[in-house]
Image (cartoon, rainbow, N blue to C red; front, side, top):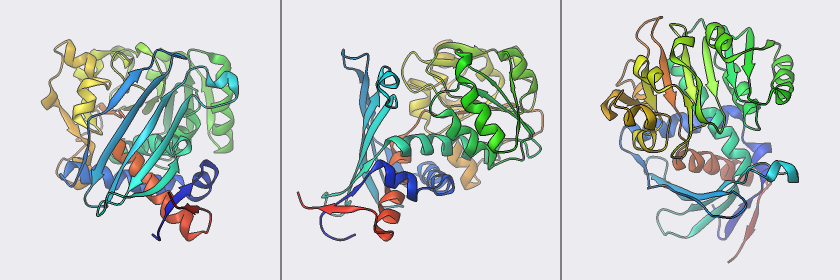
Length: 325
């Protein structure tokens, strides 16, 4: 890149970064993490005591991709009432050779698309090839990104969905119709009975899916739990499943696995980095009846990977600005 700091706005990110771009970037960085070529720094995430907001920093270095940076932002639950998304963030990229600020990239769209890419990567590598029914638990802002990305990985024929606030389900129904998929609003129990792949994307602090509701052969991508205390899944379900994660350290501390670890139902050694499956050092799903579960906590390297793609593509398209500090 040329001299100065590249500025890539939210609208430009949405124009230049596709779901396929995000999938490729996230898949590559998960593989690099598993091989030791990329690592995340400790996460800082705190309640600031104002506006009920959670704020923090995620950062890391991808030696393979030469990407260094930090994502700063968090969750403001009152933003929807102001016409804004609840998740707000900005990504800073630095030159790993000099430490100089290289790019300033809007992080809201990229957070949604990289989170969807994460579950999509897990579906690509762990779900049964013949999966036909997609279950969606949650219907917030990120749910439509999740549905679109998942639909690219398997030949789904139907979407079944449940949300604590059912009035939000038409958002998902319209996306399903656009994709040519049948749609049904169901109970959580019925969702578990029908779905071959389930994505949970809520901000819950209690289990929404119980172990006995899930049928053999299901793949579950748990995408909402990213903070201590959050929970979407019955801990006993993790003990029943083969568990994978984006990063084990986050999975056991702030991810869905924190509760099963606390209850002594599984140990840290029972969790496999999904990057090991990507790299071919772990077989992934081993039979059609196996329940696989991906604990997607959201790591900083995902954000840096998609932000790097956004910076390169935006500059190539002449859609970014450069400023001198």
